Image (cartoon, rainbow, N blue to C red; front, top):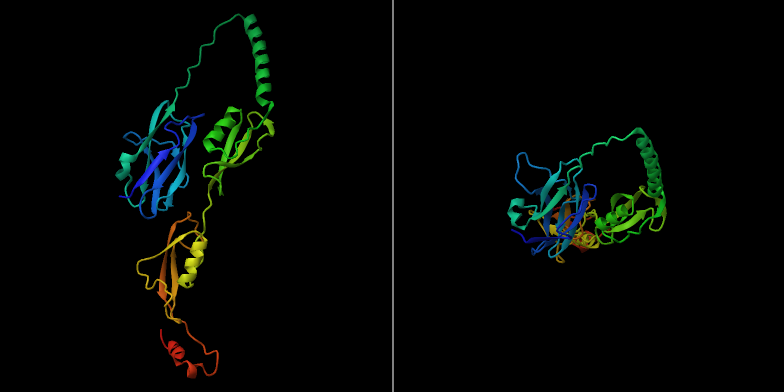
Length: 311
């Protein structure tokens, strides 16, 4: 079993209106790259299994040896009955069962408070009801004026997503988030609209974009010599290896007219992968048919002409 470890940004999750998030740092301690899954499972065995109320963007990733990946784990208990919901977070190899890593699980408990029971309406004389209604309307008007009065939008750029959401919601704004590929630290805010310092009505929405690592694309190396393919993979920051059954592996001493050619790629050309992801290529030696560029090439270099007769 491979060595995969995980740490959480916080042992507890503070839910705001039933929502919250944390960051899980997963490290591949194996000597080679690993396909790692971060999964969420019910913390208690029930029948039927209880919901986890958890979403993890891009849970399957290829992590290079000794590297660490940051996963953003989101929780949403909207519609859940009052109570506590333990959730197990397990980082495991995609080639193994998650149960093999159960002893490394981290348990996060989600608390859903009970709704307050409505208080009985006290009976008052009509005069007091009218007076109370007038006062209530005045108070509501004052509260609405304060709520919807323009306020400065906090600047949350470069802050972690969970912290940014809390700052904005505490300032009276609702928050919408999306992900964008960026060179900034994963899980941090790279842009916001409205921008920090601008005025907006309390209760209005602030959209934030959260950084995820920029992912390279598998280059088109089909039909190319293996040395050219290696250079293209290096430029794309992708690791190259050979599939089982590859008939050659490229060499400075390969025959001039029977070079090692790439005939297959897994994942396919154009697929987005993680930085340093392992991509497999299948190679075969292919003959190059020589067409005489000069009238006397067969006389001066008979070995070239022999190549044309080989399969």
